[in-house]
Length: 537
Image (cartoon, rainbow, N blue to C red; front, side, top):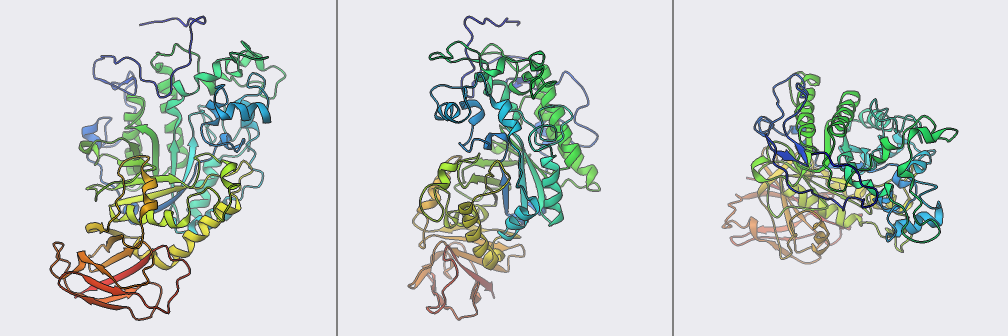
């Protein structure tokens, strides 16, 4: 049903809006029909754009073995160093980032997000040095942000003129990251967040409600014709901000097709091993379903008939968990999951926030390495893989306190990686008095874990069990799940080692528990978690 834009009554779409439910043939998802108006978008191969077809997917071994990745969630929104969602909030008067915009760049009617894009220069970016640092920290996967809700593409995009090869760094950022990561043997992933642009960037079409600029439109109203003699001459800001539309409008078919084209171009140019969508299930109806099938079929063609792809989406019901790798943003699960899954978080704000660096202490306001390691251990014990975002500054570097966090991770992983990589969950994930609060955005509960909490992993042949104690006990402790009569039926322990030292560990497997005392003279470089390796008789 057509509805003309009424400028007199227009309001920007609400956050994460969901229009009145519509009934269309074939169903609707993410406000877009699931039936495609264009045929044959899934590419050649066995996968079709249906959930029944995608359920034939099996997560690849490389991903289940990798267990840990690092993510550069990095775009022109980092320029202000004022945190995530800057591009949207700079246009909303009651947001702190609007005030920051006025103080540092001027009113958004004169200097908008498009102008920040030109200042994302990456002048000091050394991708090889960063990848080396991330690899040293134990990452087996490197993930880069390809676009955010602001619609700026970080590669040489064929379908979005507002891209990093043409504006800002004048480099194919994704292509450069991909080369650096693969050169050092890391798997490469990309994250796509652009689907939300339809509603997310509507505030750029508004204006101040009060003050000297009241009623003066923000730069979201500009068109290509108004760029004459401006730095952005020849570019159309509407391709960045999106068209102004009624708040309840469903995404236009041309918008949906552009999303499909850009994501397919990203896959074709850079052949990612992992493709992440910041959306509940596959975004934008027919576009997301076709891209999901295309990504799997593309991987089969690229890998000699074997699907090596990992496809991340959120809010996945149990019945669809096999079709993708479900992602839990800043969250964890309460139990071992039947199918591989992914936890992801950031050491701070998703986009760089200088205020976190400026907080006191060796790690400022960032997630300390102890909590990072506990998060990783808990994830691995439950059949998951953990991805950690380390946001970059606009010049292409990371700050000294981010480096300090990475150094702590590096020290622990170099010694104890054997208990993480190429492992699988044991019979139970762990024991102890403290529990994780399950679900997205609940990951902060890892801070409660301590030396009385234990997690388990085992090698793929199940001949060795790793008991990861989430701290460094100075007194004797008991592992009840490894007692000879425990319900887990662990078997008889023939050998017990403390990873990182040859010093003898005092231990005895009794009926009710395995009792252990760590060597008094051994002091590890970091004491985030003690790892016991148990060989079964």
